[in-house]
Amino acid sequence: MSDGAFSGRVVALLVLLGLALAVVPTLAAGFVMCGVSGCTGGGFGVSTDPGLTRILLVVAGLTAALPLGAYAAAHRSGVLALSALGLAVVSTLVAGLVIGSDVAGCPRTLDSAACRDESR
Image (tube, rainbow, N blue to C red):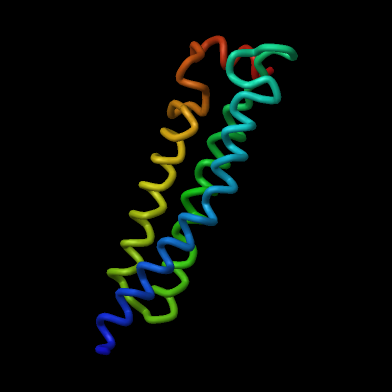
């Protein structure tokens, strides 16, 4: 087995590990975005926290990129470091899409003004 093929497998496994670990902050962001009752507001009403939602989405992206970034640093690879940065950005955006968040950290189903009012 050549070093290039082995390295590619390691990179792929590190990306998969990062994506698996990023599920936890993504789920936390989804919970924080809508609160206990969910985005419909049944029961206790809607309770949003757009600031914390954005922070958790960024944490999800950084978590996804961390294993690959550590590997890039250990091997002093600029290409892998740029790949880790791209993975962080894409993972953050995809996590936001998956939980239904807009760029402000509010649910896409809720008006932004109403979201800001609920977060107080």
